[in-house]
Amino acid sequence: MNHSACVTYEAFGAVGDGRHDDMPAIAAAHEEANRRGLPVRAKEGAVYYIAPKAATAVIRTDTDWTGASFVIDDRDLDNIHAPIFDIPPAGEEIPFALETLSAGQRQVPNPSGRELYVFVRNDHHRDFIRYGGNQDNGSPRNDSFLVNPDGSLPSPVTFDFDEITACTARTLPETSLTVTGGTFTTIANRRESKYDYHSRNISVRRSKTALSGITHLVTDELDHGAPYGGFLTISGCAKVDVTDCLLTGHRIYWTMGTGGVMVPMGSYDINCSGAAGVTFRRVTQTTDIMDRNYWGLIGTNHCRDLMFEDCVLSRFDAHTGVTNCTIRRCRLGWQCLNAIGYGTFVIEDTEAFGYAFVNLRDDYGCTWRGDFVIRNCVWHPAGEGRSVFRAHNRGTHDFGYECALPARVMIDGLTVPETETLFIFNDWGEESGAPYPMSLPREVRVKDIRGAGTVRLCENPALLSETVFRTE
Image (cartoon, rainbow, N blue to C red):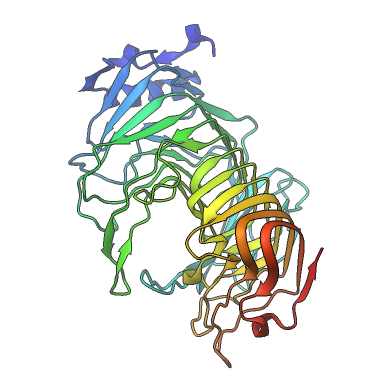
């Protein structure tokens, strides 16, 4: 970045002493940078204080925070939903009409001849109708995906859409926007422990954005507080890269759930929603990945084509579904890997801890409609865990979609230390004649299991009596 052609916060009155409210100057600097098309550069060594007032700086140009610090004061906020920095959509929203879609479809009309991010919704069908302590009525069926200039889709449509009530399309910008560096410290909120998700964060809504070298710390957490929806949130966009970032887990607080029982509140430092083609490389956390006082670092909703490489995280969680995901050379902590979704999930050269290597979320029907591929991994079972896949679905709840265990499971290299008997699937407790049964695996192939004595398909063999099971 050419510093002589940069906009600075100091030029608009920022003090950077950690005491004076610098947010008005920060917002004004970005407004001027956006108007002139210039990058923004923070002052090395400055400590910018961001008071508990609702204010958002809009970022439309490259920004370099290297060497600077920001203190975000979340005590006594007047608006918990106002982000500190917002990176809004770029590109052009264009007319784009689709009447129906089919699961697995890989081609749509694209008269624009440009690369697009497309979002579709059917308000007359609800999916992810949650079961259990946090039960709810689900959300309208929706999907978001990339469309190539020739109308082909890099990955296929997830659901059948017999009707589309909303459809939007936006061209991808020609160039990437970069946001680099900076150490952010959040002084934690002191609100009542209930589901008031705080969003004092960096909100990324622009396709082709690259974030790197960002550190987020959390201080002054009390014995109560409201949850956070993610310090880095990535939503409604595609092709975002997050590299060499250090984040912090949030303390677990409990509240009364909609099911009438006390539940732990998920509080995240990274959240992805309706995003396609997001890559995380060398993302780690300050809190111990095995410390059960802190919630898992990342949560996702309605995403596709996620990639994690060389990351250290207390948990990966595909909350309301992910279509295609790869986890490579990572280390996953006490909450391990939680997923429901579709397509192909690949886990390679990864070390994981937890009650199961893969927990198929029972509050969403334990569904994975597609394949799992596990290569050269290590799993350290917690407690009495002895099943690679954990699922619980009695088949009595309508989740809005057909529930399914992975159609194919291929394991080539898995070390499970000191396990006498290893099961690929647990006994998930399906009731005979249940109205919403799960589709069962067609094939399970297992090769090179190390550390375990006997390898069996299922704790209840009758459940998978027709599944082809091959061991080598």
